[in-house]
Amino acid sequence: MRWCEYPGYLTGSEVFQNYGCRMFSGLWITFELVAISVTLGFALAIGLAIARLYGPRWAQSVINGYTTFFRGTPLLCQLFLVYYGLGQFRLFWQDVGLWWFFREPFYCAVFTFTINTAAYQAEILRGAIQSIPRGQFEGALALGLHRWASLRHVIIPQAMILGLRPLGNELIVMIKASAVASLVTLFDLMGATRLAFARSFDLSIYLYAALIYLVLVEIIRRVWDRLELRLTRHMALR
Amino acid sequence: MKGFVRFLAAAALTVAGVTGALAQAKEWKEVRIGTEGAYPPYNNLNAKKELEGYEIDYANLLCEKMKVKCTWVVQDWDGIIPALLANKYDIIIAGMNATDERKKQVDFTAVYNKTPIWMVGPKATKGNEITPAALKGKAVGAQGSTIHANFLEKFYKDSNPRLYPTQEEANLDLINGRLDYIVADALALSDFLNGKGKDCCKLIAEVPRDAAIHGPGVAGAVRKSDTALKALFDKAIAETMADGSNKKLEDKWFKLAATN
Image (cartoon, rainbow over all chains, first blue to last red; front, side):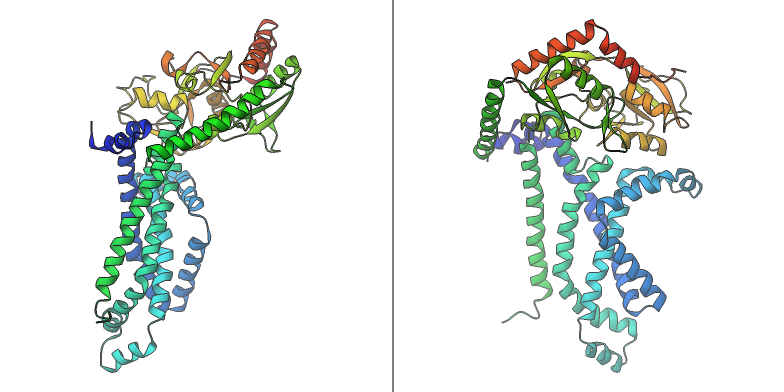
């Protein structure tokens, strides 16, 4: 018996045992989807948040429009627009040499999730940066620090502490939201579960899938607690 | 954990059993029919949100013969058997093939239709080889939870099977060029080849039927407890076979695409 069949064996669920391996390989795809898109999204979001706050006026309005659109429309809708919508312009993508990217459902999902989560994370970071008192920035400038240096060494480290909790929430939301990837033929955890259900008609498989998501989210919650303790250790009461 | 799941299952079975027993006790005056409404020309919701198709006409004809009042319920394919078991309707008439796997859950009426299974691909496809070896590494699409999905899973492990919530989405992805092949029954694919897929795609080959996976043909599915209902439908189906009225409806709705 392979390791991935054990949880089903131990819980006495035949369907979970039969489809355990598929579900755990689905879990890995879910993990890849979320890890890549949240990391790339975070890198994008830092740039977006800074440009949104300190950039030229036109950049501010463009970014404002971007975040409004991606925070205001359903993720599933965005995914379908990218997957089926952009997918219709095959000849164009082939001309610009990007068809290999938009052909694969995995890349389409990563792309959609990245631009979606970047919008949310940019707003989180903007709020966090804005809530650092203005005096911090002025003080840093008065000490002769360059604008970028003040941002990097004074403002952003403090803002990150404020943004950590909401960023953790965003990560958890993305894990759950990534289940929509199963609707564009990806066998992520949800996709594998749907397949198992379709073959067995045994509803209890959804319960096991829910438990796996729950465990994943709980692990992240605990890691985040540790992370916050560590980042705020200079502020802790002695 | 095990206990809790058992409890849930037992509770669900009890509810289904009780309602099933009640349903069996009554004489059938009214039958609720569940269908998908997204599988033309079998059953389809048209632009006016009305059901139309071969199975809609055919089941209404059966109801006429059985002298019962029929009402239609539209249900997503993925949940179509669970909803029957949950007593949302009494019979499934939705182009469902009577497979062994499904027989574990439901009983089937007599077979009323049997259509070939096709594999369709882009016009540029060379040859008509569809053996698993020939399709190694190719992206092959099908609708999830169907016999075609099971077929891909069993025989085309080395290909890249893609399963879609509806046939329409698989068709769209073939047009978009993400898929090298799609597999479905000849009627659904003829509809596609005569319509949206006219310019992009063609029939590659007919798929040989696998007795275990594809079953004997399309039949209605009822709860195992509803033996009287099954008998009622079996009799009406036999009548439509004998008097040629089934054939007439098949001819009306099924126009197979010209095979090259």
